[in-house]
Every structure is written in C-alpha cells, then in structure tokens.
Length: 441
Image 1 (spheres, helix red, strand yellow):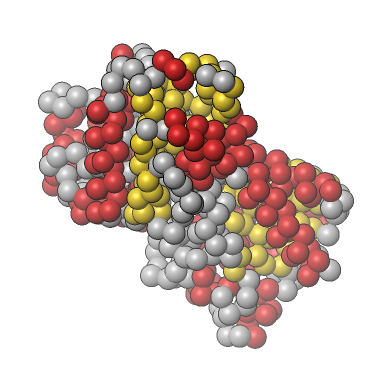
Image 2 (image 1 turned 180 degrees about the horizontal axis):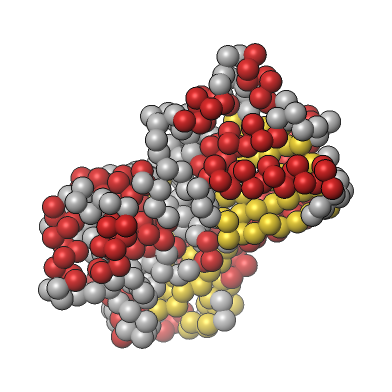
C-alpha cells in the first residue's frame, strides 16, 4: 500500500510542476493580435514603440523569455535575462546570463549591470518587458556603493542562517541595491515597462517577488535596520552595509520608489503564476485518484520542524477519528517554511520537513509525506525534496541512521540519500515555492 501511495504522491507533485510551467503561465496572460499586445487587461500598440527590450531575472527567466520570443519574434530588439546556472532554454533574440543562486556571484553582478544599462538607455518610445521569477533577488545583484558583492553575500548569509523570512531578507537587500525595490523602473523611466511575475512568495506581494525591481516598495531603510536588529546581526553586518542603512535613515540617500511615485506611473506588474496554481493542480490529481482532499493553506510559513509536527498531527487525527477528512485522504499545503541553521549538514527546507515528519508518522499504516520545491533544487542540493512513510524510521534504523542526529545537524540530504527517498526532478525552470503532500490511504 505504501508503495502505491508513494507513486501517487509523486504523480501529484509532477502535476503541480506542470501547472507551474512558465511558458504556459506567460501564454495564459499575454497574447498578440495584429499590432496589439495584450498583457493582462492592458493593451499596447506595438507600432507605437521604437524598440522592444526583454530583460529580467530568475530561475524561470529562460522559459519566460522563450514564451515572449514565441509571441513577438523579430519584434524584440534586444534582451538579457540573468538565470541560475543550468536553467537554460534555446533562444534567438534574448541573451541568457548564467549566474549564482542562492548566493550571488560576479557573473550575476555583470549581468545586472548590463540589464541596468539596457533600462537606462530605453527612451519614452520604447517598451521594456521584464520577466521576474523565483530566485530573482539573488540573480539580480547590483550592490549600491559602498557595498561590495562580498559584503552583500555576507549579509545574505547572515539573514539566511538566522531564519529570516523571505520578506525580511528582501527588505534588507532592496536597501543595499541599485536595482531592486522599484529602482529598475526608476532606471527605465520614461520608457513603458510591463513586468511579468512568476510568484515564489506567500501572498504574491509585488514588492517581494524578486525583491520587486519594478514594484513600489513599502519597506524603508529604517525597516531594514529593525530586521537586522531583531535577529541580533546588525553589528555583525559589514561596515559598508551598516553605513549605507544609517545614511539612508538620516535622509542622506534617496529611498526606494514608493506607491504613487512618478517613476512607476508607466509600469504595469502582472502575476502570471503562483503557488496556488501548483497546489490546485495537485488537488485535481488527488481527486482523480480517488482521494478526499483538503487544502490546508497556501500561506504556510514558520519554522520547518514546527510545521512538520502540525502535518503529522493531522495524519494521526485522520486515522483516529476521520477528521478533518475520512480516508483515503490527501492534505495539501503550499507556502515557504524556514530553517534555522544549527548544524553543518546538507539539505533544504523540504527535505528537513520530511525528516522532521519521519518520527511523527513512524508506525502509522498507509501514511506518506512528500515535500518538494517546484524549482527542483531544495537548498544547495540536487534534490527537489524527499518522501517518507510510516516504515521509513525502521528502515533508517537498520542502516544505522539516527533521525534526531541528522535533524540536529540539518543533514536531511544524507539521511534520505541511502534510503533512496530523495525526490529528484532536475532543473524545472520554474519556481512557485513549495508543495507539501500528506496522504493517508
């Protein structure tokens, strides 16, 4: 029974990935009819523009650019998109620049600088199409003086390691950048900008997706300092970062563009895909397979181990009382949890979620847990996530694998690898955060 449930869980996850396909996401929201380009509910007369540029960043950037090439072809004048190493597609008009993620590198800086130059060179009669997807924050690094790339990397590491949320990380990054937090639109002004966003954040907030290069920014230099203070790392941040934030608070540096800013008056932002689409697709597959389904939430966040305990408690309740669903049951959740790093192991939040669930579902019959990142890479690993069932703990103990030790060392990858329970998809060229599946047969 567990083997069948495992296969079914994997098939549901695959359906979630299909729904997050960036090309289809663009084509659902963008079309061309004659001389008209329709983006969301807005119409653009293509003949009115001297040049059409495609710029952007993100793990899904290549596929999103591919969709625009399919629609616009030779009408595209030029283009450059920063993508994660290996996340490529065959393009004719738009250049792809491979660079580092989750830690930005010099290749990313050079690409971001060239993207900024394209934006700056755009005139009033030009149309700039911007594609932004998950990973965009790290893949569009343009540190603001006096901050260097190494110093920005160190700040990012500090935030990641202390368990800061993506909203908090981006609020800080926007204020040590020359391009994030609406500043890309500021550079492109007075050109027309249409940004197509594949959301990898809870709630699809425009100013958080990719750190909002073309969206109004509600965060401030003051908020950036509050976040660093809250986690006790302001004093640990590089001197240049502290100096820039303090000068911004003192009014010596311009703030990021706020709602209603003139620089954003010619910019349109459209969310073309999100976590909800992936979750809904998994639910449809579950129903097709005969499961009673419940979407727990697409807004799930918090410490990964705590979220895992909640899911395992639900599995026990289903088996004990038939609540909130009678079997066969499938509970789906989306969103993005966080891992507070305490050890030196290898893994990611999805693998850690499943590892934290192993003990909770131990001994439960016909119970399977799967968690996977839709980008195909969970943390700095080649796995999207992991899968486990009620017998996983026993199998692990026979191999001498102690769940608590691996959990304490944040070493979920090396726990699941010898068990053959890593979920590997390869690069998916998309990213709408995570999908978690709890099946009780």
